[in-house]
Length: 625
Image (tube, rainbow, N blue to C red):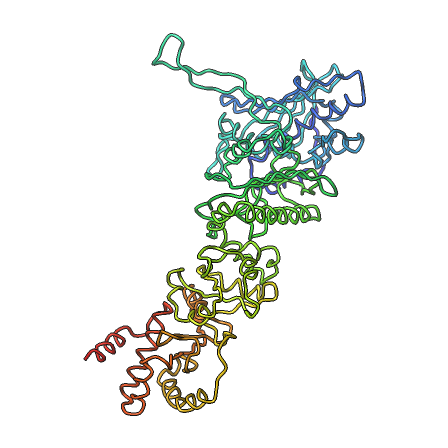
């Protein structure tokens, strides 16, 4: 028996295969099962062209046999088998694919496709094996042959005995090392779990002898091992079944079986698309976020299959970040895969699928919003923050797809409303969409800055999420209506000043200038308020950075502190203002005391930290004395 050598380039590729191409060693079983499935497919194609060949699908299967005692794992199939020449050509020259050759020579029909196009998947067996033995008998031949290799040293081919056509691949599993536990590939449970993970939807039965513990027939307290043959894989994936034959519980069971979440999804989306890019997808909109959803550890993505074979656990490129909560899978025959079938080559097909999925998710969320408002609000409570973050993160580029999905609490409706619902109720004379930001609805309702807008009869949106104002700044305007904070220096509804007001303002100008000097470095200006009616004081802001945004940014870990341009507004109709005027005329020390008290009072109203709490309490005590 003469030993043959791999070609020099094949030796280098084999070494690369074992050490670099595949990132996960467990992939080897997926590759060998895919090759076995291809071998059965080839008989199917021959039967289509040759009436003398009968193809009874029930007679074709793949068998996996782990043998711990002999440290072997055998993958057998009842496929087309290989002749001596095919063993030499297909296995002796790495990256020469017999499947690709067969595909090029035969017209594929009935939606079947040959997966193994690269000719390298077989050699992934060497990642876990010291030696690989292939015993094969070609369909229609009386002769069988054994191909044997220890890797880069070369291979041998010799005549062998095999009763039926097909192929047996026998792996001699490596011994454990400090870094790798190879015993796992001899464990029945582990092998079964890998089949379910990667090859559950191979179209032919994958059989194993499965051991279970059962009570002995003549004893209730004694147990014995019972071995029975089982078909491990599901074969027909749910996404290839007719939608009319499926019920909601079928999708819910699939959601649970795939461990997409422990909740009950609020919506499933079943997509079957044929055209320039053909694919099937089942997507789920969860009810509740996973525990790590709003952390850096959370990994988004959909399961990606090619012809029912799992290629990637989480393909992040199929989902935009703002829809990262969506779970599910995509199966397509049209994707361009790299040589290891683990990674996608980023091409036009992938982008088309991702775009279609994004638009479909938007459509389904819009439908839920319109048809089942209560259900949508449950969803929004869990994932609304992610939608708003999508607008902010994309600097407004995603606003067209997301803005109509947003909800905010309404001062008038006292419930969550959409931007469209708000605008549809706006009086003709209302120029802006008004909003107020704060930690909670209860706190915002008590803000003095809301008085003028509310008295005007205008609706106010309450922003209680830290991302709200940042997202709205990216939207800029909705249906040509700009957003305006109730704390803005210019609300656009202030009454025009008359002659008497101008005289009063001139008289009080020195007072406000004096107070501004007292608060130098703390406020940009001190002025009479046009928005206050009942409250003595409030803070307004000027510029792009609002007071609420300042609070949020400064809560983040950073050495650089942000500062909004604050304006201290005084209610000139309040009794407190008379005390300020009298102190300005008669007692500057008291004016200093009053000014600091009002400023700290305004900070507390906004939920801001007082610079010197001790000084503040001493000032209160001074007033009490």
